[in-house]
Length: 145
Image 1 (cartoon, rainbow, N blue to C red):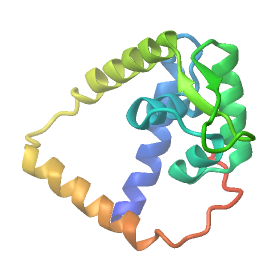
Image 2: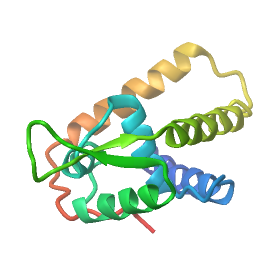
Image 3: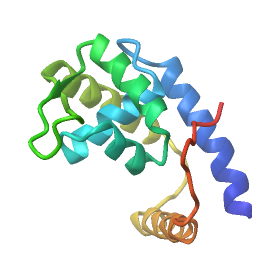
Image 4: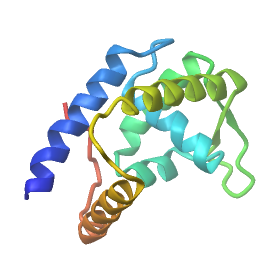
């Protein structure tokens, strides 16, 4: 429970900082869509919702915002005609690269004597905790305020 007590506030503060420092008006939700598409390539809105444990409706709103900003576009889906794939545009690729570079620079400022082993252990613990709760139904889940 001590991990949850630290991770929750940290997560919310990092999200808030990202939004405060947002370039090009990229919200945390749009940033998450751009990052997912950068990592996995074109996806449908339902696929993105499942991957992020968010509601399809919320993801659709974020995709709409990203589309309006010219950061993503819809392309035909060869496997399902009714569900288009969402793809990064070049401006979207540049935007997510700039955002992640800024975030990495900010997070490198974490002080202390942290080692690569410390970071690997932290990722290992958090990954196991995520596995423990993998069965939680997040249908209709919205991000926390």
